[in-house]
Length: 131
Image (tube, rainbow, N blue to C red; front, side, top):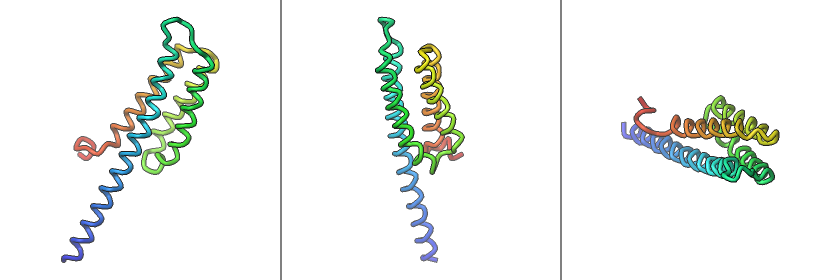
């Protein structure tokens, strides 16, 4: 009886530790990408009506690289469908920036930020998601 209790307790500790690690990685990843998207937004919504195209393209490259680096690890514990939606928005965002359609790019940027926030909320360890 005691062995079963210890074994169950050990499994529970491992699950909680693993969940904590995945939550921390998800939060860190989403925070980094969201900060980069915010910087890109500030460049695209310029008060002077002059958008630094080179800076926007460079920021977009950094966002893509960050997403590629994080995507593989996130795919271990987040639904692929959710990640594909974000990747689709990032690809569309890049396309709009390259074609200088900045109004549409802001729309895609908003969608990407919303999806990232949704992923963070959906996989958070809280009572709402447990029940």
